[in-house]
Image 1 (cartoon, rainbow, N blue to C red):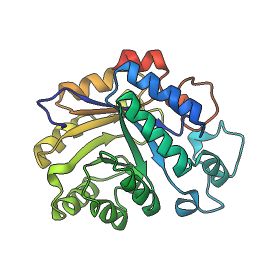
Image 2: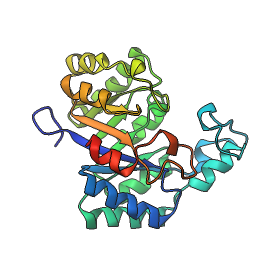
Image 3: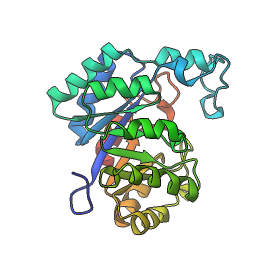
Image 4: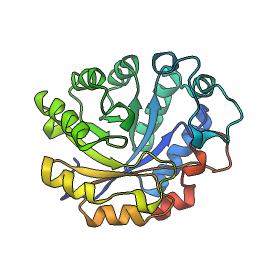
Length: 252
């Protein structure tokens, strides 16, 4: 259970940093468990459901040689079979498996695994048909709120409240910039969310140090999430803005 009375719920964000290799996913689970994370988070998607064939690559990923963003994402698309193995390995290692679904097919798959909760990306905060589909599964929901206005957040919270899911909802303040500078974190949003919605609030921290997370805890955050990698020099779109194993341990 996540609430202000309990200790901070820590999510070690793997995302696509294991480069679609099971052996690396297992290593990252071991690292997250050893570091003391409560949960490790992956991503679940079918590329054809979320990207056009001529998708434009984000500027922060210009270090990747491949120009076609669809091809980049397709190479990182995990099979449902592999994710089942990852889910089972998390069970074995006694760490909570979380994943962000990006399409309905992926929501159905994660539901079949009986995941503990859904983590929703900032990019889907205003995708109300998708939010309603996730709400229909009646699972706990942690939703990031980067890329959004206060009205966007209000509308999303209202949607889940109307679905009788307020007691299963948590909000994460997030700045959708990779990496995020400390001056752009805007931690006071945490206080605003706590006072306004009376639900657990946290921070999806994309900064390169521990200061924002410490500040978030001081303001009453119940959840912290941060990307990590086995090695920042590995290929991949998010490696450069992620913590390495010793930094993950230090942060936690």
